[in-house]
Image 1 (tube, rainbow, N blue to C red):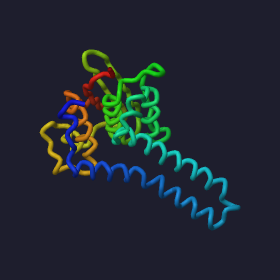
Image 2: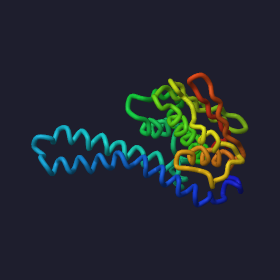
Image 3: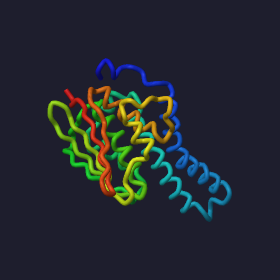
Amino acid sequence: MTESGERQIPVRVAELLCSRLCHDLISPVAALNNGMELLAEDPADMIGDVADLLAFSAGQASARLQFYRVAYGLGGGEAAALSLPDAARLVRGMAEPGKLELDWPAEPGESIGRDATKLVLNLAALGIEALPRGGRLRVEITRGELLTLSVTGEGVGAGLREEVAAALDPAAGAHGLTARSVQGWFTAWLARAQGGDCVAVKGSDSVTLTATARSAE
């Protein structure tokens, strides 16, 4: 990262990112706990249904942890080695089953490096959030002196919340952020740390988020 990219994010942003992560984990973890309680009450009659619930919930929790480990964490080595198809797998794990069609063309083994991978994952998180009724998420990566990363969400009612769109503004401060808007601020911060920016363009039942990043050396 650039010198500006190495600066620490505000403590409030770190706190809000932790809150967002925990919020996304509460549901599958609670379902795991409920399943275990059901097994303790009457395992013979419920073992089939409960086993399915446990498997689904464990899968959700694991997928979300794997995503946030790279998107929010310091796992530089892991992110640097992550291929684009593997990054796409992480994004699919964040979507509700059957609600998202992901269009992410990438050659097996292709990688764009740690910083760009983190940025495209966070752009994808914004894109999923912008599709409240599901739809299609299209990811495009254009190589040049800088990488251009574009994520387009298409679906009924597609669009960013007003507070999330406002958080993309370079002038947005951390003091007014919430757990809902912090994703936008953090994504824009990642882009600026690489000397670029992040912009959102609203269309008819679509929204396109575009950022620039350095390519892998």
